[in-house]
Length: 273
Ligand code: FES
Image: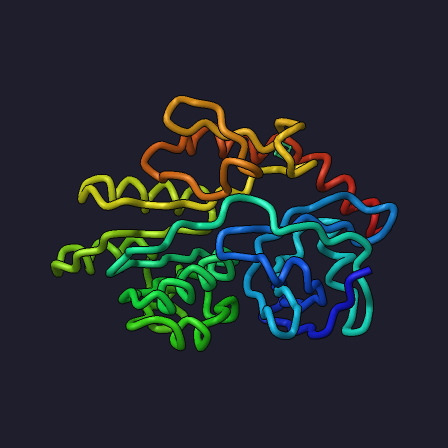
């Protein structure tokens, strides 16, 4: 069992949990994820490692309450335990040698972008962080990003934080101003990662996106997390989740993401009855 040592509500639908998992904390790197099962009747869900503390032996996860499992998880409190917590899984992000990077998070994707920015900062890279949210109530991790970035730009779709627009608007402006990035990392909704990748392709800037498809076993066996990258089939759990944004077939990924939407809703509705 894996004890929750800290729980923090980041916004009405996003929760942070710091979980005691010393063996995972010892090896975890940015870009990797865990698969958890809340109880013995639960499904397995993948969650990206948002942070880790090797000394305390804890791993931080941040999740949005979108379905039955995340709702049950979100109802756990400090001191409660999670039944299974497996990881670190996936290939760590390759961040060595980067001099100047733009790290972009969309919504909950900001939680996954944060450890990337932190690692780049620790390696001496100059980091511009850009994070976009639907409105100001949903903004998360602004202070944390500031602590590991040279500049932070927060946008909202509705302009409620005084900075209306999309992350691509900010990135485009920074590129037009002559900022030379040797790496762009984009993590968030598929539509946003696609838009960023289309933009950076025009400037020929290496771009990493983090794919978050449906996962079941997390070991490359079931094929559930299949994505097409550069015309080849890859499995996000063992080949990713980071991929070259200029090579990902985002349209296929968007179709696959919707495959079980109806079943997910039925499961959530049944849980609430
Ligand atoms: Fe089964 Fe990746 S989750 S192959």
